[in-house]
Amino acid sequence: MPRCLPLALALLLVTLFTPALAAGQPLVFTAIPDEDETRLQQRFQAVADYLAEALDVEVRFIPVTSYAASVTAFRNNQVQLAWFGGFTGVQARQLVPGSRAIAQGVEDPEYRSYFIVNRAIGLAPHDGDSAPEGLRGLTFSFGSRSSTSGRLMPEHYLRRDLGASPDELFDRVGFSGNHSRTIAVVQSGAYQAGVVSYKAWENEVASGSVDAERVQVIWESPPYPDYQWTVRGDVDERFGDGFTERLQQALLDMDDPDLLASFPRSGFIPAENDDYREILEVAQSLGLIDE
Image (cartoon, rainbow, N blue to C red; front, side, top):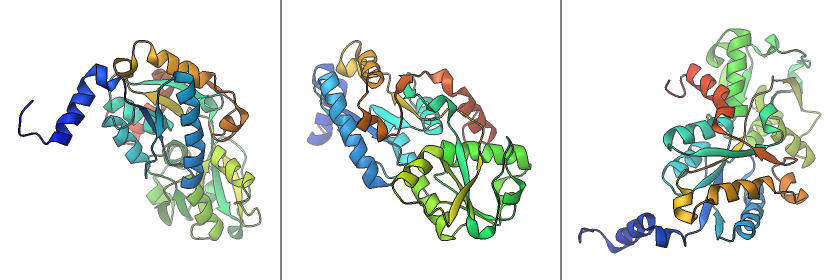
C-alpha cells in the first residue's frame, strides 16, 4: 500500500478488502424516506434490532435524506441492504451487478397509487382503469422524482390514458419529496391534486393526519409491483457463505405484528429481480433508465 495514503484511508481500504476484518463489520441498511422521517427512524431501528438477533451480527440502520441518496449509499457500499421502492430497487441493481431483490411485502406484487384532490375543487371520485379527465388543468404534486407509487407509475398511467406529459396536462407540477408531504400540500390547497402510495395514505389516515373534509381519494390506479428488500451481491464474502439466504429467511420469518404494522405489511414473501421487469420497462419508456 502506498505510503502517501493517509492513515485513516489506508485503514478503511484494509477493512473493505480484507475478508477476515470485513467479517467483523456491521450489516448496514437504509430505506427510502417515503414518509415522515421520525416515524421511519423508529420503525427501522426496531427492524435493526430484530435482524441483529436473528443473524447474530451487529446491524445498523442509517437514514438518508432522499430516494437518490438511498441508491447512492447502496452503490458506494455504505449500506449492504436497503428497503427500496420498485424504481429505486431497479436503479440500485443496475448500478451494482450481482445485487438481488430477496423479499417483498405480501401486498407489494399488487401495489397501487391513490390520486387525491382538495375537496374545494369539487372533483368527484372516478371509477375504472383510466385516469380521470377531470385532472386536466389542475395544479398537481408528485412525491419524490424517484418514487414508484408517487411518480413513475402514476406518470405512466397519465401519459397512457390522457395522452400527454405532466407538463402538458397540468397548470403547475411539483415534487413534494415524499408521500406525507404530498398529502399535506394537497390538503392545504397549495396544490389542487396529487398522487400517493395507498399504504402511505392509509398510514396518514390512521395517524389522524388526514382531514377528510379537505382532501379525498378520487382514483385508484391499476396494480403494479413495488417495494422490496435488495441486498448487495458481495455480502457472503463479508459475512460468510450462505449469509444472503439467512438474511432472506430472517425477513420471511418476521412475524411480530408491531414490526409488520410499521411498514405496514401483513408479512414478507420471496422476491427476485425479474419481479420488477415491468418497472424497468416503464422507467426506460420514460427515459429515466437507459435501455
